[in-house]
Length: 404
Ligand SMILES: Cc1cc2nc3c(=O)[nH]c(=O)nc-3n(C[C@H](O)[C@H](O)[C@H](O)COP(=O)(O)O)c2cc1C
Image (cartoon, helix red, strand yellow):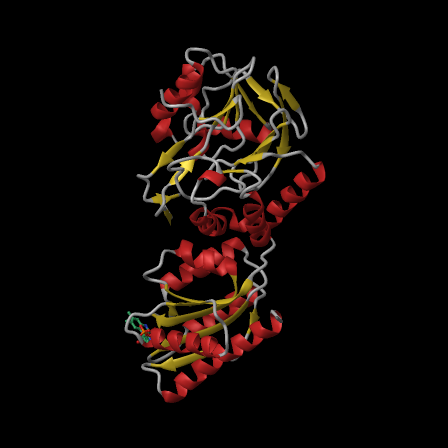
């Protein structure tokens, strides 16, 4: 018989892998897929922590039945109402009609919006409340805006497990195992930067608050069970924590993203020349992204990672080239802090892109390095020299900011 997937003697993994969704939130590609994690605590009272995307409900229910047979689920704890975790609640409640749903006030406002029929057996918990399931003692730590208002963590004091909703989550299916030490873990960390930048990125101060709160609670924790990606243990948790801590403080590394849009190659040449200026001046981490070819998630990932952001756009019908404006709006929405930047562009008769990008950088309160550049048509030798020097000036500023 295939063994159950267990986390402790009485906590089981009943989540699923999604390798068919192309775009998470219809926005972010999933080259390694994604897992929707759900956990079953088998005790005198049987408790499920979160559910899975509705597309996987049948598989999910069968996994639950493999563990508990025809016993009923007594409690469903809803740590997060986003549909990739709450999608199976309706069907689950019909299957287990006496199941009590545990959440906070905000959870139930949202539950009503998605499942107006579920009006009874609702257990409202407040911060610090506890729930006894027999042997296990569960308590609730609120994590508002990480990354929805209702989010809470559930802490199991008996097995020292923290169920952390989307916090410490990452893209990537759990192919062979669920525990970090048993997996080829590196790509989960790499995807964690992208997951954070795209999904949680706007809410750095809230992430910091909850990290601080958990630290102050000083809970003994052996395992952290997020809703996406590996179960974190002493083996791999520290690095996951450090990534969330770093990104939520907007603490960046010494490096630069050169982002450009280009229809006929002129802005590309300027971008490459700026990047060479950075490289010649000793900056090793330089990433060039063609905005039309790279999904925004990779651009946001690198932006959250590196201090310098250099953006180039042609003027298009008196405007910033649309794909560049789209990324700038995504950055605005995330209120990304504490970057240095430079601006360049290209036009043919009346440049507008550069003069429209500069106020956006100012609004973000980013330090603008050097004079913005904008050439007409193909860059001449003098334009290339300016571009190279702009790259060097950004490099110089990075050297000052990250003294070795
Ligand atoms: C559809 C379209 C609209 C454009 N609109 C403007 C414009 O409003 N003002 C301007 O000065 N140049 C305009 N241009 C010219 C481009 O900005 C110019 O060719 C630029 O060098 C293109 O950069 P690229 O080679 O990197 O694509 C336009 C070009 C195209 C194709």
